[in-house]
Length: 180
Image (cartoon, rainbow, N blue to C red; front, top):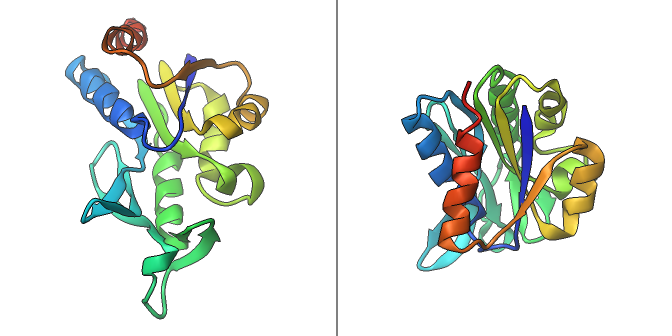
């Protein structure tokens, strides 16, 4: 079992990196599980965040920009900065994570202030990552929260994006060469 933490600022390609890795792992016959949090754009502006089950590709609306909030009543009831997160989408994601193990590749996109400071978010990820019932796990964390992640998650290899194309490919190969 190997744990990788990918870190980079917003917009650097963390989720895109995870999608590519998941596709390559599936092509190699790996069981891929976990959660992606792809951005949702409208007219070129990020207006939301999705949540995608990596085993089924089912998606939910995870968060919306507070500036676009106009629904009553709503499940978007957990504020964090410019975002309002959906408690029901978080519960759905945590249920997915609860059944993610065992797997070959576990991806958690991403752990942040909700998990580290508010006791919300993908709390199940913090419970299952130490179990090690995976060949490799990839966790996304913003640079400003990297030390929090290292304290909570322990031994991990940190990869900072952006990577040049050759380094990116080498990183994927390193993870996928863990096959037994």
